[in-house]
Image (cartoon, rainbow, N blue to C red; front, side):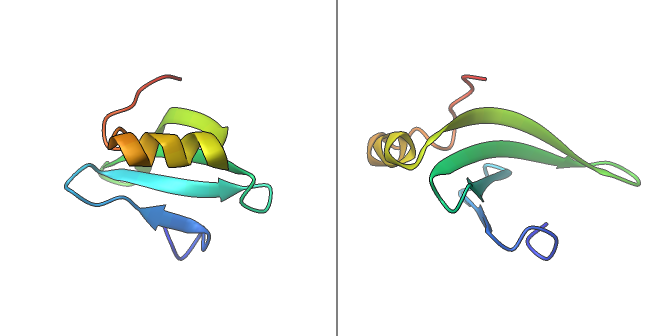
Length: 68
């Protein structure tokens, strides 16, 4: 996914989540991915501003938030 979306970062911790930078890093989107037989499925978990994302990270909630 990072080859297709170079501004994306994997979250790690076994969370199967990825963070996308949107609009020049003004917004962030957290998605959860799952590999199928022929496709990768992406489920949107959260969308917000970079400042809101920083608050999630400070609280350690980026691995389990599902507000979308």
